[in-house]
Image 1 (cartoon, rainbow, N blue to C red):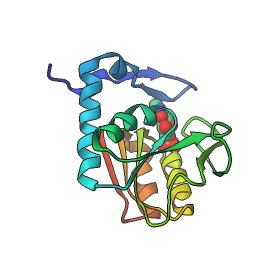
Image 2: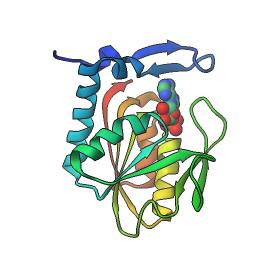
Image 3: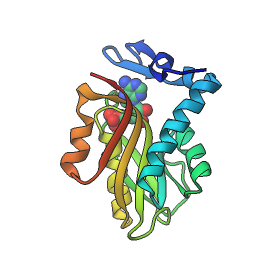
Length: 178
Ligand code: AMP
């Protein structure tokens, strides 16, 4: 079955707040051919970069990053919402497209000095989450060489937010909404 992944993204207007066009990816998870196509795409992108570690963002980032880490035999580090990881953790605060303030955390031993890290998430909106995750990785001494997303909401300029902070960080996405 040939899959155009864009056909499997469901737009939900005004969720979770009025004015937000929520991109629901559960139709991709529910259709094995679409899910495989998405994982194949992520695997190809990560393989080109040869990172030491994949850092996955809670929670839909986990869904995509886990099979990629398994297929490529690359360690997986978790970037989680506040209070989920056991100590010791490092924390970072950031704002979301539809949320005022959020906190993400990583285990202090999740990454080591000098590791090349790829960050994986389902969707790039304002880039707040991506930048906060990169800051955590860098606090642990790692280098974020790429950020990879299935979906990019280009009109929110998240790509620019990532690259203005780190021009060497590659930003890769598959389905772009202008
Ligand atoms: P941001 O930090 O603004 O780039 O937001 C990215 C994070 O929030 C990702 O983990 C997405 O899952 C989620 N997110 C933000 N905006 C949307 C949206 N319109 N549709 C679906 N998920 C979103």
